[in-house]
Image (cartoon, rainbow, N blue to C red; front, side, top):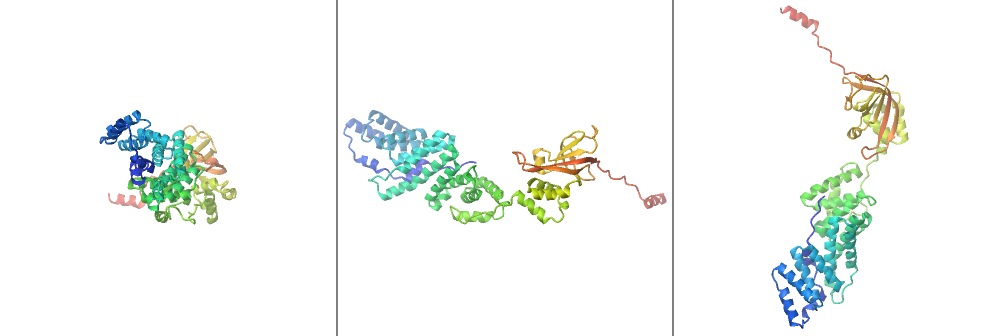
Length: 441
């Protein structure tokens, strides 16, 4: 599924991160060397971003220990961001971190870019590098020169993205979905509820839903909630992609779509499900089989597909109870021939067996068939007046589910025989009709 676009790192930084006090302080630093000062002035006042980036790089090469090095690197980060030069932005941020390891802006931008690379490649090392940067950002202490208000603004903007990055690294790099879920939930808790209805918060609501469907972390009740939450606020194009998954997992768990609209309404009003939230679980196949046994007074009246379902999915007691009334009874076997020889015809009777082209009924013939009588694969038997294949129930075996077929029963019949298609009798005029025709001559 396509992913929503994230807000650009440049726009997010401009909107939420204040300039580091350490960099602001450098504005008052005096550059004593006139040549260095002129080079600095020339580089920082360029209007063309390409020329400016080249000039800033030249300044750093010429004056690698300048007192304004960090300020120039900060400016270079912004310039490369404006140009969309992701690799060069990362390089400038990395160089700034060498001199200022706790620079939150540089950590954030490096994390953001590494995260996007992790998402693009799923490379384990890239994802690990992104997570390490995010952990570094979470560990940074408030500088003494930074006000509480500024620090709150900075951390409020970047901490959710740091947790998102760690979650994505677990999800894509390590396939540790439980750990990813914990980080996604921590991230969403940090956002105001309205922030989860768009942008990164909405994206990760969807990612959280998907994580809850993965091996080792599967929880379809939680998955349904977060799919419903994402569906409520997704743009129309994405809503159409989310809804089939939402319906599939809800129906898989609940058995039908009844009640899903109510969950959509609840999820629109709350990021997380209430503590008492639950979804009624659909009956298991064995429970459905038992229900059929208990509610059917005459088991012989069950249709063939229901009988096969009970034999395939019911408990041993329920299957044996049904088989007791089926065994040694003659029955037609409507189905599609999978293979046949003179002594045996193998057919697919249930829709699952037909879809998988696998035989679930085996009819051993009472008399060997002639070459002319052996049906070709694909031949269909129905009920009279069409050609009908009959046999006597002999034995059954439960067959476990496979990649191509859900659990079924292989039913064996003996004394098979084919009833040819009955032809409609030729129409003969009645005696009265013949007499009428004779009188008219």
